Image 1 (tube, rainbow, N blue to C red):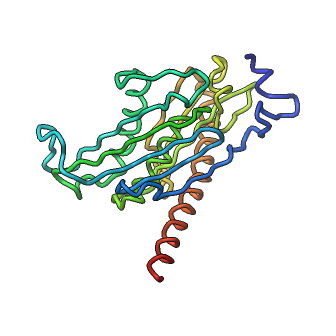
Image 2: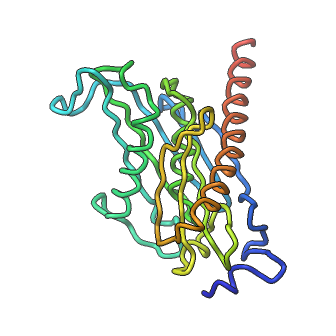
Length: 245
């Protein structure tokens, strides 16, 4: 697919959005009773379910860290998540790559020193894939960790951005990020201080364009932060209402 097809002369993208427009976001916490924390997160047609367990005793004693908690991330893709029906093995390179990115991102955000000799498990399930998988996983994991009461220095909010026809575009969908001509940058920030928690590029981008793409992605992260905050408040209000009866 050419760049011309990805952005119309009127400035509209393949799904009808403007260049600086996020896909619709819907999310909620406490969706699983069996987990210590959980979240369901939709961004456009990308749908993610996350369950968090812990802090709890490590399953593998040899990996116990005496001064902090160990973080374990497992990422799985449902066979029905895309039109291509296939089951991925646990050793799949892409699954391990996303697990690693999520783990690295939260190792700097979770206050692991509060939970020595323990393990925090984050299980991520991609139910439907339409682009922006990594950002959706990070945002859903943030919501689930907050729901579990895990102490963090701040929320971690992620968003993608890219370049189409010399125009920075926000929150790439599957068609856009699948184009070899569209650079794909994922940025995760800690909203309160603006620190970068993750910066991950899928393809080459000229240095002169990097700042514009990063700024757009960071603006998207700030909007997502408000959405996550609203979801946490809604869950707290629901709990308060149940306790009052």
